[in-house]
Image 1 (cartoon, rainbow, N blue to C red):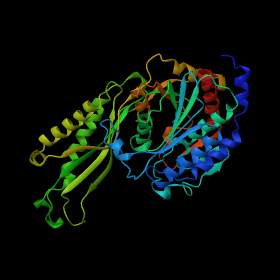
Image 2 (image 1 turned 45 degrees about the vertical axis):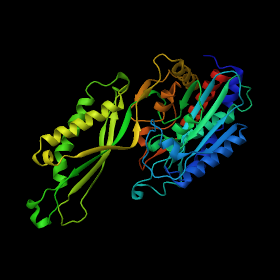
Image 3 (image 1 turned 135 degrees about the vertical axis):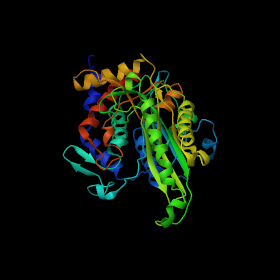
Length: 417
């Protein structure tokens, strides 16, 4: 497509230096999911939206009311508050395009693996390092920079910005925002996609398996049953289940070695070195296939554990117990053929002078499924490489943020401009 004069002026207004400064500013707020800093950052961003002349809705969510809803998406991090934040241009009769990003980040993990403080961003040339750099404060910055670049353009439709909390542990922030009545005709989530269009997300369900043992003194371990040993056949059965569930993935996810991973993330057993442990607790995540009912996925894992128990003499008499807690991410996808993919893909091509980016699916859960479930066509397109997210090498290129910002500018102007 040809870039017109209004679009060219808006693209020229994208300020690369300001993008770098803003990213550093946001990274210095340690907005770990459920922390006070998460709420602090929502208030910081609310003020930035006000300075862009947006109508701002900043509210404290009623956690008890949201948790009581049948479709509550779950959560893992303890919290006493959650703040919703929506900014929007003035109401018009045209369509509404939502730009969405989450402000929470995961904990930094082992600090010894970081070069310096993960919440003191380190800048090396064009690259900014720090917790949340790509997941996803770079995407939040791209939204703010795009809004600043088109601030002087008179819009025929409406732009809405949804900044949400708690994405990392289930999606409480997006869930509460949608239940407050904030909606739109289409949504772009600026999660890290390395320039690709993520038009679908697999789901992920958090599970807990409790495996019993029989305690005794370590010197007479033969008189008891170690819960660790009892768990081993279950672990092997879970690996076989993962292989079966990944035998025929959706084409959007066929490029991944394991499209629907089943991963055990924590194992806890025993409370004394010289005692045989009488309980092991395994917690992990079960990948949900595109279009799969989460209830079906749960039933498959429960049947897998039950079969493993039935085949083991100890577990047959003392079966493991499976429960479901934490984040419960269903899958979600943009309707096939929806024009949003063409819109964003063409905007990226016009900015970069390259071919339209590939359309893919992501093997992880995100807020996409909540917006899609609310009837809002949604895709993910944002700066950063998701393979660096949640790790000690998390980083993002400012140039990549600029590219995404410019593509968002064109997508917004071609939708509501």
